[in-house]
Image 1 (cartoon, rainbow, N blue to C red):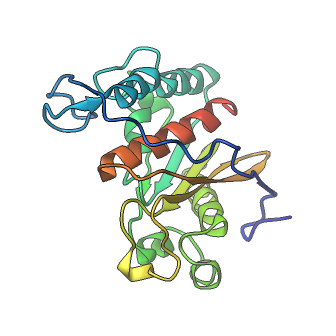
Image 2: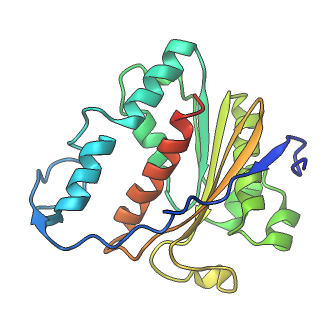
Length: 219
């Protein structure tokens, strides 16, 4: 069906493994100076460390999906932008960790509140009808940011991390995340449920991993 902003929309159901298991608390330490890693020298579970290595987050930057995404965008002369709520700009930040990223990303939005989303082009009636935590709002976010920057790809992400959002309590479910990828072919929307995690930052990393996986398949 067409989206509210005129682009065809494809709803993508969560995969069977959309809810990950909670990682055992076997620990492994890592560097403390990296701005992309959980702060300080607190122990990091081996599974979390391995996930950081696999995704190239922070000081584990080799073989990153995000690096691959940025390099492919530059090579193909394509651009991307984001409108982020629960990830607070992390997706755009990871994309720009690669040299030359300014050719691929001209700007992005962090819209942490309802009014922030509305100010950047998300229809107020979409939030009122479907709630800020919905497929429809993620679609509107992706379409709006892509339109503003005339980008080839627009990413919209909204969801609840570790606690219920008091400003949107009736629709807020911790660990439930919606994100959308808008492109010329249309807009696809995705839904994930995340297992409880020790910090907001680790929730953000988990969401970034899911978005990178889907975006890499489409760039």
